[in-house]
Image (tube, rainbow, N blue to C red; front, side, top):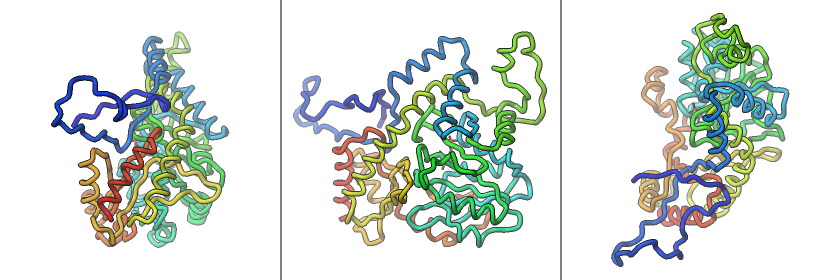
Length: 415
Ligand SMILES: *Cc1c(COP(=O)(O)O)cnc(C)c1O
């Protein structure tokens, strides 16, 4: 089935309702297909399209004034007093952050097993090793007691992942890191905006926090990412390494007429800069981040209410003083249910309802399993969660009817 991404704003109605007459003559025996509900739907409005058009007409396409504006807006969104460095993916951002923290051969980094592979891959890019850690029941964030047990003298950093937008306990993470002399790189790919103890994820005292603007993330630029840091040394190093290790980027050379050919290479860097075309989308999307979160939160609250009593474990809401980004809605089918995870996914698919699974844990993936000789029961919490995991549709502007339809199918299959 082909799925076209509709262009729309939050307020526009999306589809003809079932009461509207069909546009042409219809065969009486053809049953209308159930309207599909995607697992996620990016929201792109006219403002994003206009912003891109403006950049395309301007004559400057790569990293320039728009990327700078996006960085400044992002730093301001985080409350100021931080540096934001725009990159072309969160993977690139995590790589640059770890490089700037000096992670290299001989080092180890603590990574939760329940995450996307990128969190761990960037550590291997640098020739260092990861140490997988199980997650907590409920929050599905890295379990610090387990991290303590797996700690070795070679551990140099910890990478907490704010799973699905649930805010990790940053007071505890930072205390743990201080106790053991670790750097902290937060994977905030799901976490915009997210708060813990009233404080935004991205504004805490970790070494760096990295956000993703991939198509299915809380805000999007198609592909993109942002490194946020309070450490000017990390910001400078990340800026240098994102453009080939040059001491000045193309826009800087362009602005200073007469010296555009003159630059030095100070390190063997990467090519991780964000284009102005993408940054233009990002500036608009960032201005909508809070309304997107609110809309997802309303949908999540309805799910929590309607799914209560069914044999599923729902995501844990943020504690007092926190804000859950509700980037997604991953549930776990209980062992007592009438059907298992695969049957639930098949049933939802048959009703044109999109699902996903976040995630098959890294210790069950061939590369990581073989490299670190993992056994399936090494990380019991993550494994048990994965066995029943299904991510239900959740996106800004999801209607009550859409949520109720998903819940009705879940109820039918599991009860
Ligand atoms: C999406 C994601 C990433 C990678 O983001 P990209 O922008 O696609 O590179 C990293 N970590 C987690 C947890 C993610 O979900």
